[in-house]
Length: 567
Ligand SMILES: *[C@@H]1O[C@H](CO)[C@@H](O)[C@H](O)[C@H]1NC(C)=O
Ligand SMILES: *[C@@H]1O[C@H](CO)[C@@H](O)[C@H](O)[C@H]1NC(C)=O
Ligand SMILES: *[C@@H]1O[C@H](CO)[C@@H](O)[C@H](O)[C@H]1NC(C)=O
Ligand SMILES: *[C@@H]1O[C@H](CO)[C@@H](O)[C@H](O)[C@H]1NC(C)=O
Ligand SMILES: *[C@@H]1O[C@H](CO)[C@@H](O)[C@H](O)[C@H]1NC(C)=O
Ligand SMILES: *[C@@H]1O[C@H](CO)[C@@H](O)[C@H](O)[C@H]1NC(C)=O
Image 1 (tube, rainbow, N blue to C red):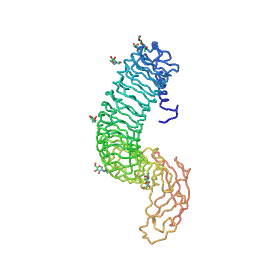
Image 2: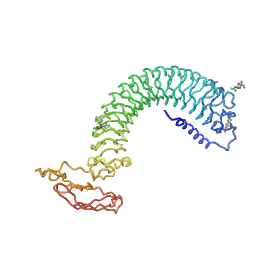
Image 3: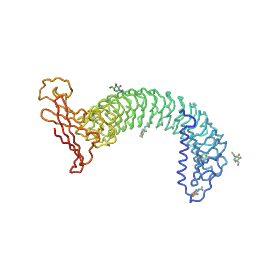
Image 4: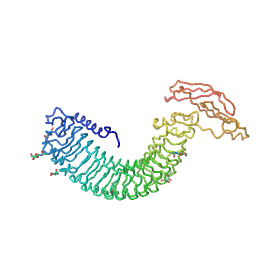
């Protein structure tokens, strides 16, 4: 969060959001209605909402309508709120929500908000407050939401919340808080949501969350936590969501999350985790979302997900995984998303995805996979999208997607594809998927197809040349003739030096022709044609080939390329 002065984006953003809201509300205002008295330098919307954003507004205005329930200051140049700033203002007694967005407040007087018996929600965002005192909140015994965000607050005093015991939501994100006093949350036994993200917290005292027995959501994202003390989460048996992402956690003691039996969402991404204890998630039976991406995990222990059968989303992307234990996901029959991109996987065991009977999206991009076993996706009958891009795959075994009956998208780009007969079965299937996804799936070989997009290659071009040619027919120069059985002879391949045309012949006939049109000769419409003659060389001798290609309309309407040859 070290930003040059004057360039702090969150603050600027809040002001902008406020103005935007103001514009929206302006659009809703009804100028035709009865005139509502409104304070100078403010705008009133109906008789309920008052917006004050004028640059001339330097104090809390007089004359807020008696019926107003919401009062917003957006970017108003208020530098301090005096003691009792609202106490004797007519019209403020019904306020339920009060917000200061982007005002340069530097201090709050004692009981600054006294005299607002209905106030439930108080927000101060993007201010210049560097400290908060509990005295400022005197008289707010009914407050349920307090937000003091994106301000340079460095510390919280122990008694800060003693006057606001009914808080249910406390948002303190984007400040500069470095530590939490032991008893600071003691009065907050009703608190359900606590946000401490984007502060400077480096460690947390074991007992600090002790009083928060009703807490449902705890956000500690983007702090500097390097470890979690044992017992830290002890009293949080009601916690549903825990955000610890963006910290510096290198290790999790085995019992860290043991008390959190109601947890459904756990964010641990972007930490420095190198290993996980096998039982670390064993108490989270209701866990649904688990994010472990962007850590340094090189391996995962067997049984890691044994206790979390209801996971729906699991991300392990951006780690250092070289392999995955077979059966690791065997228990995850509800998992719909599995992210394994940006790891170092070179090999997947055949049964690695066994048990994932609800999987819809599987991401394996940016790994080091060179081959996929035929059955590796076999039982994934619910798979819809598979990302295999940026691996080292040259080919796919036939039938590798056979069991994936609703698979619609497979990303293949960034692999060194060998565009030969092994990919031919895939071709029909590729025809039915989104062509844009694989426009950049390019052939690395054979030479004459190199650089072509796989969807653009004709199925007829995906041919294999069988085995090494008998010596007499080798295209490679300098190979001695041997006396191989004539009947066993594989075909002889003729090709031109540029590799644009191949002709595969055996003893009886020439059986395969593949041709890539020279650049600028792509044929698209019926009636177009191309014709050229070549002298093709091979170890068997030379052959003259004349090829004419023309596009002819099919009876059904679609045009097809119709090659004809005359050797
Ligand atoms: C607020 O305005 C509505 C109509 O615009 C009116 O019916 C209602 O009585 C007003 N309330 C007060 C407290 O003025
Ligand atoms: C509010 O008004 C009362 C009596 O009208 C007065 O005693 C008190 O000092 C005033 N408070 C403030 C903060 O102005
Ligand atoms: C809290 O609310 C109750 C009832 O809504 C009200 O009687 C009481 O005065 C309020 N307390 C404060 C400190 O505003
Ligand atoms: C898990 O979820 C179920 C269904 O929502 C709920 O009945 C159960 O109490 C939850 N378990 C815990 C420990 O919260
Ligand atoms: C990928 O595999 C190759 C050889 O199989 C190896 O040399 C290379 O280091 C691997 N890359 C990564 C990122 O693991
Ligand atoms: C697919 O599921 C069947 C029955 O559930 C099982 O026998 C088979 O081993 C599984 N195959 C693979 C490759 O996971």
